[in-house]
Image (tube, rainbow, N blue to C red):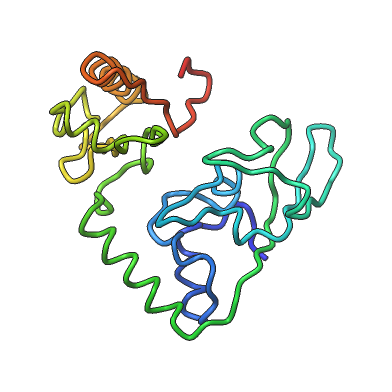
Length: 204
């Protein structure tokens, strides 16, 4: 059982240290537990919903409700909570005791350190991967956008689907860079990239 405000990455590390398998993929994902459930965060072929057992939720009118996993329909970066008015308060995960969990988690972190800008400030992957084609990162890289910068926001040189804050980036910098990437990729490949991040009170 974890509170919604707990670091999802830290939870993945702590559970793996106890040889509990199911959340190894969470290591390195910049999210809270509640945010990971809300967005159905995933990596390495795994998604948050796969380890989910129950979610405690407070509705806008103050009602407290516990949802079991079968009651909730998830899909790629989508959860039913995105259409609800309220807040996730805690999550119960169903994990499996497994001796190799810690090693698996360390291997995932090592791979991410080599392929993602984990040492820089970012919100994780910016765009959803299009269905049945190249990944968003590959499309952005193909369009020569690695290193493109607006204000303090920059397309990562390590992984093109990350926008990193190189110093003093504003939300406007990030939104303008997202729009630039979308227009450039659509112009050159015909693919419109849908944001994976959610912009509060924004137009994306």
